[in-house]
Length: 98
Image 1 (cartoon, rainbow, N blue to C red):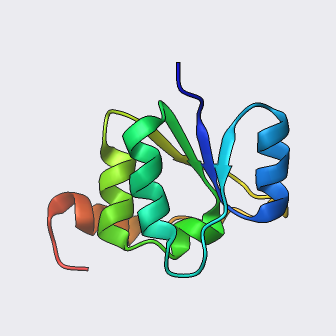
Image 2 (image 1 turned 90 degrees about the vertical axis):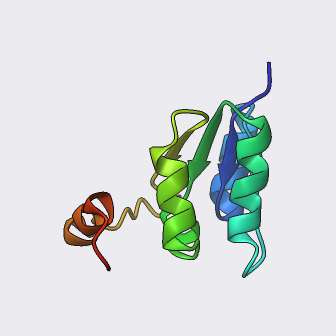
């Protein structure tokens, strides 16, 4: 069975690797491609908030809403998890312009 994948910073990625999770530390501008690649093979994709913020909102929302694989934004090594923009999320779910 394939292992989960973590996409984020170097320090957190090292910790996830110790736990048996595959990890990716994408270069600037490659975050969306890293997410798409991870979704092809992994049963679970974990993303740091910093990387999630640099992924196109539509791509990220589609990944988060998909039934498989499960995609979750998790705190990074600094423990920072920004508060979600609930208004933007509701507008997106209702199909209204952002």
